[in-house]
Length: 196
Figure 1 (spheres, rainbow, N blue to C red):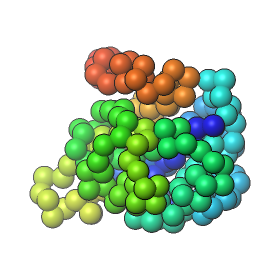
Figure 2: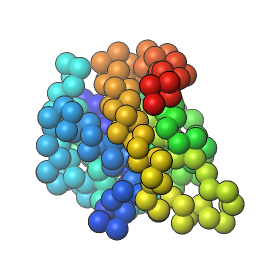
Figure 3: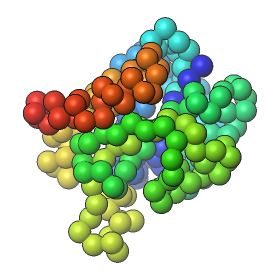
Figure 4: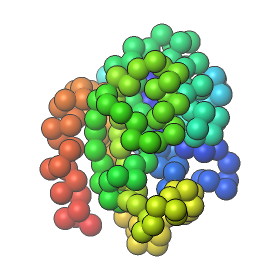
């Protein structure tokens, strides 16, 4: 079973903010695959289903971003999932808006949700779907920037970006991270930009 986690903050205040990119992707994935996100377990909203011929568990931790690892660890232990079968979807300041990068392992880049997940799992050896949100012009604005809604020009492109992320996750589940990286890191994003 793959555990697919979207990182974000619960509550209406944060619903359409940049920091909730992981939640937005999970919502689109759930809708596309017909997997209802309605059950509650381990401080998460979860849904179980099948993708690419394999079982998946979709999860949106409700512990707030900085404590995401608590919820992830509970699901990880209960369902006995291997770290290599964990996929974490999160916003990324180091990528321009509308760019996606798939990665296996590595550091956290200062992302507090990832820091929490890595601490609680005791490892960074899991798949990441990094969703670019770009950076504000000054460093002091980072916290405010990630908690702001998307700009109008970003909202115009958001739907196609979420569809691309859903396709990338499907490829990870069905074909593995290496195949998915080859397909979505670079070439797919270039095509995406051309279509927009």
